[in-house]
Image (cartoon, rainbow, N blue to C red; front, side, top):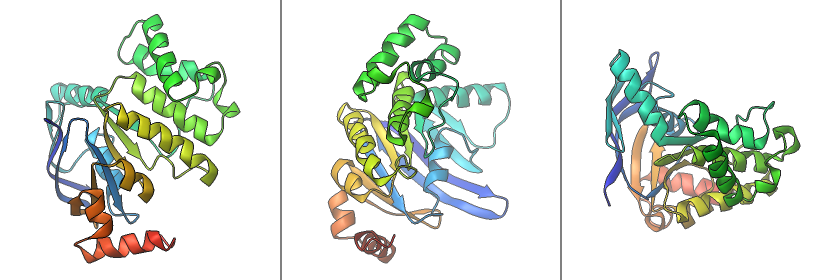
Length: 253
């Protein structure tokens, strides 16, 4: 399969803090990659650099053939960043739904205002995606009438309605009560099964083991291990990975 995401020699500084250190990574089309690691290891920052919510300090990012070098300025650079964002759907820890809009209005807002999609076409696409996450019957409700799990499922439907080539999930279950986590993970499994390329920052080791094609372990801003789930979880090569897996197994991480 062809490469759809390519990260080359990426660095990110916040002031003097070196958060990402010479990170290089390729993701194939339709591949599901889970990023695991301790808090502060750089996982979320890496995800945010891919769609330029954070501007990389050094290196380059390519998404679906669009190549963007860090540090560039001007109209052409801004247009490239805009085009990359159109190709990447992002699901955050918090749901970021507009409280004054219904579920349906939340889902069609991006396609209509950002992409200029015909409203009726956007509605049909939104209803299809809401149905796929099991929430079409909630399309006229407002976010304050939804559970946390339902809000996150709406957020996934909203991202899918932008018709991205890559989905980025930044710890999408971390803000949920334990009994609601399963419903969101099941929707993510369905998205993966449907062939979407996915990069997922997660603490859900069961999901990573079951759904990921590859698991990447991060520590101190670096990719320290990259392999199939069975290799990472059963035969980790780096002692930091082994410590991480043990911590999750014992429930202390």
